[in-house]
Image (tube, rainbow, N blue to C red):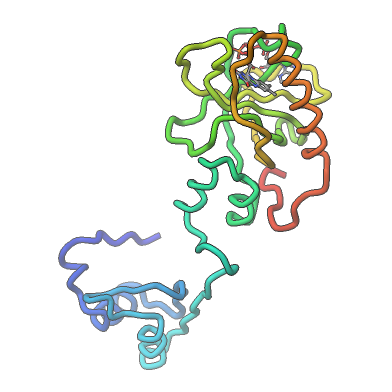
Length: 230
Ligand SMILES: Cc1cc2nc3c(=O)[nH]c(=O)nc-3n(C[C@H](O)[C@H](O)[C@H](O)COP(=O)(O)O)c2cc1C
Ligand SMILES: Nc1ncnc2c1ncn2[C@@H]1O[C@H](COP(=O)(O)OP(=O)(O)OP(=O)(O)O)[C@@H](O)[C@H]1O
């Protein structure tokens, strides 16, 4: 990979000089692929049309990739905004695969098993763009993928201001997951995190979450968002 520092000298380099000095002189390109709205060179003169014409003169091939889909352009900021809003289905379609995290399972407060839902806890980086709430997910470990339900949040039922955790309950599984690396891919958000009048009410809601998540995570997959964890 060649990374060019975008400094004043590069910013003021005319498109024609960039082609001659960088693409031909330094890299000796035989083919160049750019997006349909790509611009380069001083004054943004280097359009895909400019590049195609330069390619014909210098003898390199130019592929211009047209926009994908019909709606909003696919961009990492659009995907982050969708995940922050909890719309994982649309984020997954824009990504072309299900959004997933890969992390080690850490110890928690051992409350999960008392509630009837032992959960594998994972700490996600603070900048993770994910809405708090309950999700239908699939979890991968030891070479197998399991349907599961996950909660991402601060556990407002029990804590005032704890850091957010991803907690995953794996259906039809019993075993020790501490220290293992889990892949968790997200299929749908079921609801936001809530504080109930009693722990019993939280547990009743968790039963309903589990039924809904099992239905989704064992159901047919969206062909536009295949699994990336297996
Ligand atoms: C399906 C599911 C739904 C959950 N919903 C909530 C919720 O709405 N509010 C909340 O504070 N915690 C929720 N939790 C998190 C539980 O409070 C947490 O798993 C439990 O307290 C265990 O906590 P620990 O990791 O501190 O032991 C949920 C967990 C699961 C698995
Ligand atoms: N079906 C399951 N799904 C997830 N973890 C399970 C399951 N069965 C057993 N476990 C084990 O139980 C651990 C979680 O248990 P429990 O929730 O009581 O303790 P914890 O580490 O404190 O987590 P939490 O803080 O969520 O309570 C997991 O890390 C895993 O090793």
